[in-house]
Image (cartoon, rainbow, N blue to C red; front, side, top):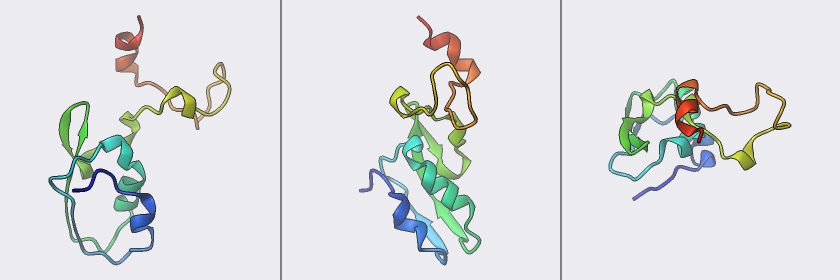
Length: 99
C-alpha cells in the first residue's frame, strides 16, 4: 500500500501509458508535485486514483492543489508582506479559522 508518491519517482518516467494508484491512503495535499507532473504527461492514456482531502475521497486528476495550505513554518517572506510565493488561506475558510 502506498501512502505517498515522491516526486522523483515519476520525474524520469515520461513514457508511462497506464497508472493505477487506487486503494491507497494518499493525502491530496501531499501529492501536489505528482499532480503537476501528471498534468504534463502526453503519453498517459489511463489513470485511476483517489486521494483524501478534508476526510473526503477525491479523484486525483480533479483535485485543485490551490486548496492546500502550507504550514506557517513553510510560508515565504515576511509575515506582513504578501507575495505571489506566499500560501494564502482560501477566502471561504478565513471566517472559520479565526477565533
